[in-house]
Image (spheres, rainbow, N blue to C red):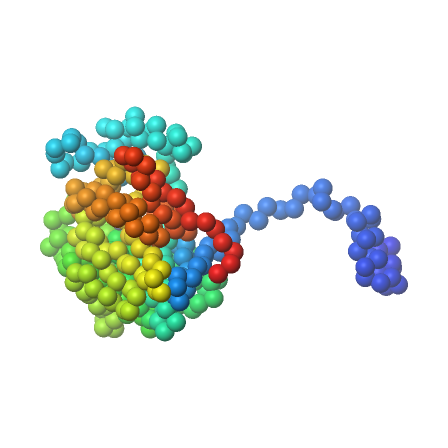
Length: 338
Ligand SMILES: [Zn+2]
Ligand SMILES: [Zn+2]
């Protein structure tokens, strides 16, 4: 080191650099500490004149074995646990995809900059899912935006992993935003009577929705809409009930380019594109959710529309393609250019 310092004082820099390769023992062979951190997760594309940024809120071990359901029979609306009653086929599909349970669940949100408005579609889990998630704000900042800049937040539904991010720890994360959800979802999840009548495992979802929305309601910044509606030029709400009473898709359109943003149509891509009858115990009406899933698979594959799916592996952008009796998910090409 002393020799290097002496040489550094008398030689030009480029000579020192080449000398370093010879004299420095701590080179490529030494163990650099592993960083054990992940990169900020945002992904950007242009959709006509709109800029779309997919923001990851995090990933978590999805409780497949506990929550996935399958119809008890072809004729009955009753649902049973998939892994207790239909595990053979499910395990075959997972094995074919080189997966084991629990699968890794992505939680994503979509930021649309129309040029005049900054619209966030869903908000991740905030503080409601623990340390796995709630990374939306840091990824938003890494993507070049600040929470105060968000004008509107359109929610697909009021489950914790979609609404929680608007108010992590009960504090308004987006102080200048108006939050929108369908009236049907607000009427259900904000009702004490519905909470009392719901199964115990849904209690947390009711509480999460109320805790997240309360500050916006007090500030008169929570609004509801009913039915299919253009909420902003180029951004249309489309009712897609079943998973929840007011579950909503958002179709984003600019200069003939279209993006259809799903909420909870698919939780485990490796299973549900092949077998759209598979749902979750969180579906308010599983039979209707299955119908909605089949309808949107068919339409998305017929229209060849670009899909943004909240729980398909980040960034959850792709196309649905029909292959005989089943559907497959074709992830969109990655591009480093806008
Ligand atoms: Zn949900
Ligand atoms: Zn969800």
